[in-house]
Image (cartoon, rainbow, N blue to C red; front, side):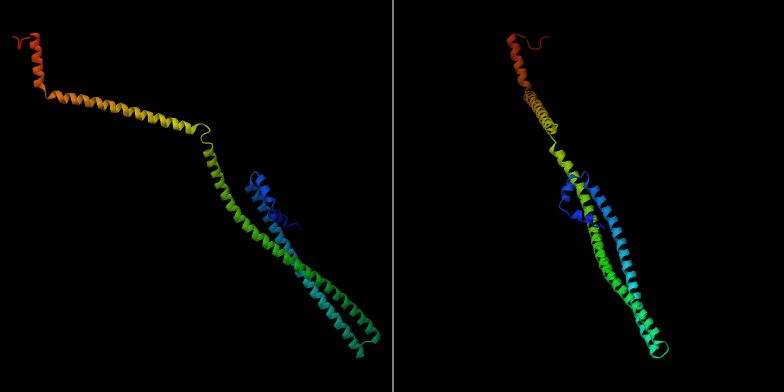
Length: 237
């Protein structure tokens, strides 16, 4: 019976290399655990059958022991009857010999059945122990599989993100962003320069206006001097 072949395979060091070559280790592991669960069912059924056989054999042994004792008692009883004159001595001896022969036969069968009982009980104990080990390992592996499935999801997501980060500039994304940044900075600088020029012009104009707006008398004097130089009379009629 090869119930624990897969259990042995999983314990082998080569399993790591095999997992590396699998296209989908999670699915393969789930399939392996399903097969192990089937093995566990078969092992439990086999244990129950061996245990039942051990019980039946033990019962048969007890019957043989009882029959062996019964025929031993019959041999004594028949000789007692011969001693009491109830049965002819020759016939009693023949009957006693037959009873003793049957007593030996059942005793031998009882011994053989006893050996079978010991062997079956030992086998059933080993099967029970192995079944319990398989059950415990299955529970442990199923928990580990849940953890590994979660880790696989995380690792795949992390791998995808890292891959995207590693290949981020392959299509010039970063360079394009840098060019856009430089262009925006140039535009901002140019806009600022135009603003400063416009502000400076406004300041000069304001300064000129401030100087001239309160100097009307001086302008009139300058204008009068010009008229005089040109011979233009004041307020011609």
